[in-house]
Amino acid sequence: MAYIYQGMNLPKDQNILFACMDWGLGHASRSVPLIRALQGNGNRVSLASAGSAKEFLEDYFPELTVYSKPSYNIYYSAWVPMWLVTAQQSLTILKIIEEEKRWTERVIGSNKFDSIYSDNCYGVYSKEIPSTLITHQLMLKTPGLFSFAEPMLHRQILKWTSAFGKCLIPDVAGNDNLSGDLSHKYDLPANAEFFGIQSRFQLDTPAEKFEEDIEVCAIISGPEPQRTFLEERLKDILGKRKRKSIIIRGLPGKNDRTEKGNLLLYNHVKDSEFRGMIAKADLVISRSGYSTIMDLVTLKKKAILIPTPGQTEQEYLSRHLSGREQFKMVSQEKFTADFLAGSLSS
Image 1 (spheres, rainbow, N blue to C red):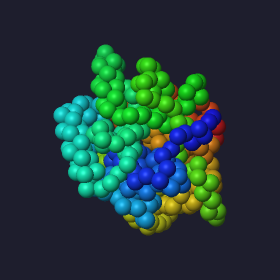
Image 2 (cartoon, one colour):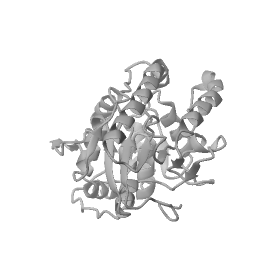
Image 3 (cartoon, rainbow, N blue to C red):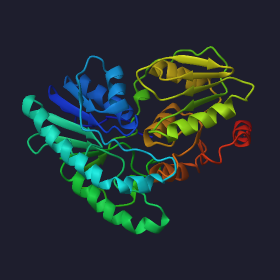
């Protein structure tokens, strides 16, 4: 599988604004290699995001300015499917995109930026300077009865994409792709190109050797309350195993470690620690967010994928990839101690 930047025409010696969507940590984490590549080309990069994604970027790039941009503030419901929650918030999302446009004009008006890179922030662009969109989601998956809406949603995304000079897709073309229908079902925008699997673990970060014997490394991510629901389920199941397991809770800004019996809980870990933990574990458990999948593919680690309930993109990606030897899919409600035991023994 081809990876990043061979043949990519990156700018040099520019002031660049790089914005990341604040829906979980995935958009920020997958942007790390591109930000590093832009820095390596002599560019001066300023970042922008909100919430935990902004905290992640501040922690990862302490030397860079990180602006607070309008937040999408997408919330999850404990009981209402995510696609319905998103539909209910569609007007709010459109409002935030308009706020992003005004925010961008203010920021570039008071700073001499030469270009913009925007990971899924459809309002962060300018007609005055070159603007690049980064997205793998050129169509939105809808549940069965509403699949008729997919072409209409695709056209809306194309409209947003056309405001940018270029669209970079973090995937590869052909049968080895990871995103499936999300960027391969419909014709690509004229300004789009694939630029390879994006993971912060492609940067040859050394892995710290993890001394303890670890059976499972579970990576929790995503908005509440589903993040906590999965964490509590994992604590209950992994806490009864005879061997030690790790839960990385996906809460940046704190590097606390808590030990509860045979469970090690970390709020957040450095990349080198993360790689060491992944290498030592027999099995990984994670959500099926696209950025997490790119990390696991890069690290060549087998995993159980548990999609966030009702989030159609994660459910689709789990199904799309579950036929591959590396991944096994299970719903959150069907993830049991027996399922885990069977996965560890197979």
